[in-house]
Length: 351
Ligand code: KG4
Ligand code: ZN
Image (cartoon, rainbow, N blue to C red; front, side, top):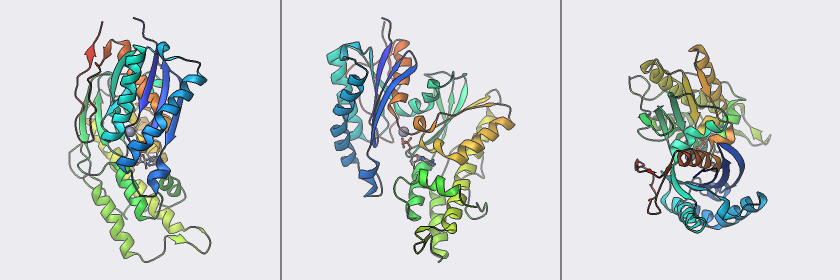
């Protein structure tokens, strides 16, 4: 069977996203973000997330298929994010994907959401194996040794908050709306970073693991100590102090991430390529510092554009199509994998 057209479905957190990939090339993508629904609560509410996915997934599918003049039987592969993620949210996407695969007789495949983040840059350029992957999102901060598109070895992970989670919690302390990562990044660009203001937790060791919860506590302590207002309400604009604090937080996070990357590269001197992935990879300082780091080491940085860093359907469609093209897939009894549980290596090889 020649596998060509893959529909990818992403519903692991708070974006309902679908995309079509044909032979490794993105055809079209559609996305509905629930960020404003959760912003009222200051974080993702799992029950609401699942309901929103349920509300959006059918209409998004219809729109994507009709504007590409496709019928279900023209799909060769149905790929879906199978985890890790919010269980109720994943189940919406997986149930939809299974029903569609059953009706269309397309190959069904569950994709590891984390691997899909790391592979997404393959939509833009050829990935030279082996390489190092830094995945920084709202739920994960992990470093991987990537030997090929199926062999990923995790070298380090966050022991507490993920980088994005810590940034979002700090942004909340600073009065920014959830999810505050992009806003904190924008304000940081207008500020002056004080490299001594905040600590670099868990960097002064030889581990490749991360810890970010201490940074959040340090920011809270600093805010309690400094009575100056962060917002200049009279002028209806943010204060220079807020921009400076954002810049200092940003610098601390980026220095921790880059410090661990350098350590990992030292351990694997044969590896010359770094992939940045996940929502926090959209961060402007991280992108600049990682580029500089790889340039200094005469290596390469593969950097997906920001819309491929945050959760999206294209990364699921791309990974699913790549795996299916090599004969991999799942039976319809494949299970969703909740947050905190490892995704099993249970891909089946079909003829
Ligand atoms: O990968 P993603 O969309 O969802 C998860 O799988 O978690 O990542 C979302 C995270 C959020 O914490 C968000 O605040 C953060 O990525 N983020 C950023 C930026 N854009 C998104 N963090 C820092 N700087 C940004 N520009
Ligand atoms: Zn993600």
